[in-house]
Length: 184
Image (cartoon, rainbow, N blue to C red; front, side):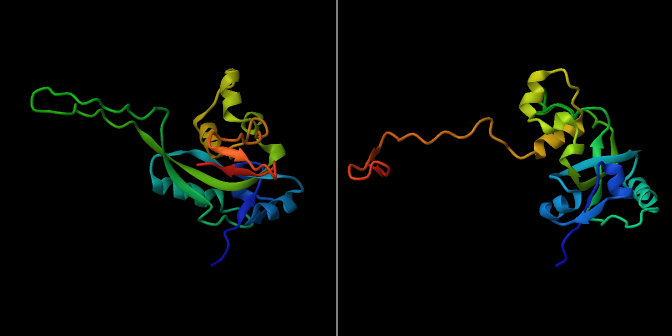
């Protein structure tokens, strides 16, 4: 099975057109970039009404590229167009109906989403922070793409983990105070 090579680029547009290189692992991408990298996904190009139109856009964007992207790296995704999905319906018991008539679904569009390695120095400043810190500041406008990026961030501790306390049913061994024994 061949390894999937992800492009190394500063943004999604350059990942499709002119990447700085391709790497399968973070270690290889860091060697190419000369600094730490993060794996990210970004939506590129204008919204398209159909999946076929999005795939045609992908063909046009990657036509002039010296090395076209791997089809597994770029995919067409369906997203809500400016609206939120409808809230969950509450059951009701009117007449012979248990559930209300559902509202019409919000309009959707198709966008291209590319996965790539990005140097840490090129990541937006608010995406380098943790989501809870950005939310508490409150003065930064967060888009849906940024929320998706926050959800894919690895969890990082706020401070170093403290040593574990001895539990209620544990005692220290008299001959070795560094050893904890379960006492049942």
